[in-house]
Length: 118
Image (tube, rainbow, N blue to C red; front, side, top):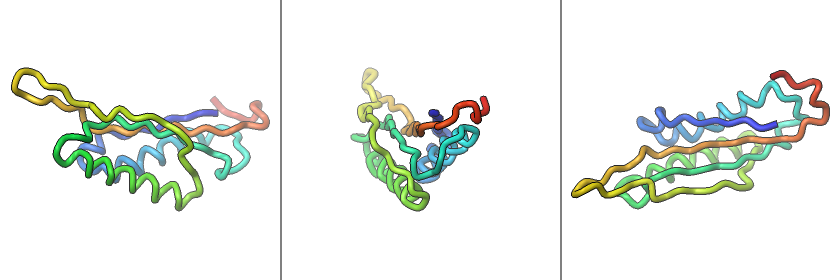
């Protein structure tokens, strides 16, 4: 079973809250799958951030630290993912940047798929 969590709007106000809530949403979306235990859940984290711009690297760090702290507390780990850290472009004299975003995908085996609700 797989499930996705993302909270980009919350990241505009608090990157740390976005990191925690993306994990929480992904796990909440997985709740109807009949996985055997939380320690069998693995995650992929995909980062989209203009990390080279002033303040953006620190904001991404805050999101990552909050995500990691939450995952450590509940016993879930990221075992893969990808990043797009050039989420800005020059348009004439102006730099246009995309808001920082984190997408957390959780996945786990379901020994009996007939127990899973969809």
